[in-house]
Image 1 (cartoon, helix red, strand yellow):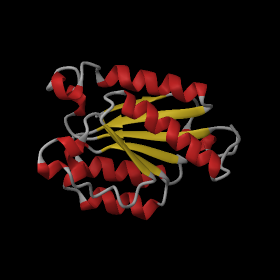
Image 2: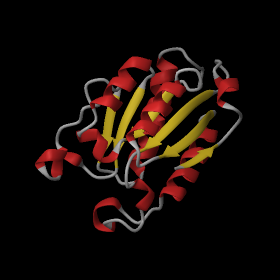
Image 3: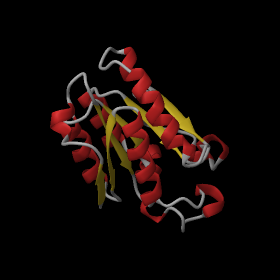
Length: 168
């Protein structure tokens, strides 16, 4: 499990002056840069996380990143986000297509969430076309490689601003 935190402590960020966003990476995403680069690209997870933290700083948003191959760790992180973060960006990996537990956790905490995928899941194998998360998230961005994460973070911050959580 890897966690990178940018900015100040998440509890301190639950105010209108600075947003706090949790970025969750699901199973096998720790292998980015090595795993099927023709599909997932050559960017490593560490470089994506660094760029997310930097982008967050430019958006006055603290970004915390967590990767786990374990469904329960991801569910716990979603539950913990309730008191720590204003929004979530999630790439649940294969759990997108299998995990009712992740879906229920996101629905339960009622934190605005954006689903992202490096590849276009609708151009892949048929079993990847269904997302258990799609019906409960604010939106979904897929097919733009690492840019899917950056677009997802920007879209989430814009959405949160529209809810009046901050002033951009």
